[in-house]
Structure formats: structure tokens, C-alpha cells
Image 1 (cartoon, one colour):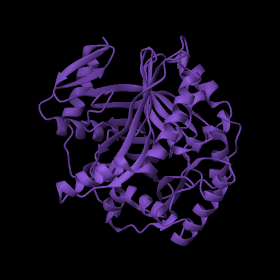
Image 2: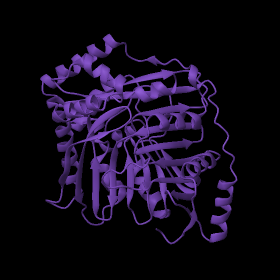
Image 3: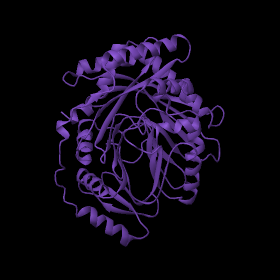
Image 4: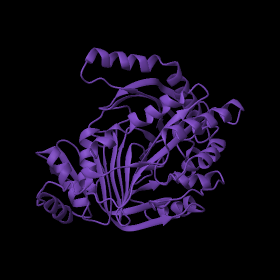
Length: 430
């Protein structure tokens, strides 16, 4: 633990988490990250929050990563923030012309006024001295946890940008591109949205977390824009000289009423030739990305086709790691690996062109990455999926879901997989 963190005892872990979230939401900028006590490979903190912006950087793609590097050099403490999907335009000289209804910046990072770490027994507050840390802890402890307001959250009807038939026709066009050799696999996403929506973001995040607790969950607020995230996927983690990526490809339904049937569905996912094919393609893509930043011969697949169970779905997750080349900056690492291969397909540049052509809205923060950079340069970022996006000023509410398309994909099955991935989000608004 860093020396400037002051420790306080925790007697009620769940209540302390709620108090941290409630306190953080009083600020115009905050990032609350929760792993919901999942214990996967390469664990990070149980819960970490950056609250208040002592300084921030907010940019469109162009020279954003270069400017982030300069910002990071000026602020060598903790940084929290996101990399929007459309930073692809800077990394690969692409364009984004689809409409953007949410308005998240392509890149946003902030140096927090307060950093809080929480585990079952202790709460740590970063502060210049014990008196300031005690003031923050007292403010947290004094919060009365009233039930958040459901507002109109349970009465929202979402519209789809694609009818089922239009989706199926689009998938067939993408399969045509694969047949012609334009690409091998493409992640195609569709949006569900509501307009003039009034929700309580804290209520919706807590409801989503209750239905679908996930290891890379987040409540993220930039003024009037909110990301309410239940992501199970890690983009990148740096731990010393080691870099780790954990892409997901392969989704199976669960049967919580019958343990035997659930185990069978888990085995079917593990043995699925289609899902293994998708997973190994993205593993090869990530290995190639990591090889650009890692020492020769150090990139390895720690786990291939790992099956992990979540409340709504089983997921096929692989873990790839490597030893970084010396003295690489955060932005140099991002330039060679972003966006996450599981959210593009292969080859990356060509499929991102096709994504722009066939999808109907700008992805924005969706399928980008959210996380933190620690003092000294270690970091951890998720992949922004299974998420609710909300612009409180305009009332625009949205979620996107996608799946990996190969030549062997069945379009109707891919549509159903999208609906399966959105199960937890739909339950929040039922």
C-alpha cells in the first residue's frame, strides 16, 4: 500500500461500499470501480474510487494520446479515466461519421482530489496527512443511506436501431465480406435506446450490480454523462514489467434452476467449435498486439478457453501475458493495442472500416476502456461492455450489444446472443 494512504477499519463492507458510491456521486466527476469479490487471475483491488477532479484532460481523437502523455508527466499521481473507441481514428488514421447521441469525449482523464481503496476489513484514503483523511472518512461515515429513487427507471421502453430482419440481412452482408477475404471475424454491435428518459443513475447502477455483479463493474460520471457498467472483461493490466490481457469470445446461457443442466451448458460452451474458433482468433490478434510492446519470446497464453460463470451467462475467457520492453509509456502501449481485439475482429484496421460502414451510431465510450493509472505507471483497464450509457442533460439512454461474426455464424443465433448479453440490463428496466 502506498505510504500516503491512511487506513480505517471497516465493520460492514457492503454498507461502506454504498457510502463511498453515494459520497462520490456528490462530485461532478468520479470513477467508482468494483470487482464484486471475483477472484480471477491477476486480481486488483476489491473496490477503488477516484473522486473529484483536481485537474482533467478532455479531448477528441487527433493528438489525444500525445496530449495525455504530457498530462501524465505533469500529474504523476493517480489518474482515472477512459479511452473511447473512436481513438481508433488516431491510432489507425480512420474516421467516425455515424451520429453520436451521448456526447462522451474520445478521451477523458482526471487527477482525483481523493482516492479511496476498500476491502473487506479496511478502507484506505489517500491524503497529505491523517487529519484530511479523517475528515473524508467522517464525511463517508456520516452519510445516511436512503433508498435511491427508481424515478421512472422501471417504465422505460427501448427502441432498436435494427429490426431483427435488418440485423440478419446485415450479418449476411458481413459474411459476404468474410467470404471475399476482407476479414476473418468482425464484432458487430447494435444499439437499443430511449429518449427523454429520467433515471437515478445510482439506483440503476446498484440494480444492475445486484442482478449482474461483474469483476470490472464501474459507476463513472463526467458532469451530466454516466457510464453504468457491468463488464466481465479486462483490456489491459500492467503490473511491473508484466502486461496482461483477458479477451472474451464465447457466450453461453445459464440454467440456474438445474445445476446439472447448467454444468452441461458450461461444457457445451467449452467444446463449441464455433466459440473456440472465435476465441482463438482474438487470442492470436492480442498476441500479435502484445508482441509489438513486449520482449521477444515473452508473450504467452496463460489460459486458453477458460470458462467463467456469471449470473446471466457463461463466458469463454483467455489470458495472454508478456514482459514489456523497457521504458514504454502508457500511451505507447495503448497505441499498439487499442481498441481491444475482441471488440473489433481481424484484421483490425479493415474490420473497423466495416464497423463504421454497417453500424448506425458512434460507439463512443462503448467498447473503449475505463480504469486507472497508479503512481509509478502500473494500470488496469476494463473493456466497456454490458453497460448503460446516459446523458442526463438530454435524457438519452442507451445500451449496445454485439457478437463476433465469422463465416460460420448463423445470423438468427447471433441476434439471440445479443439479447442474451443484454438480459441483465433489460431486467433493470422491467
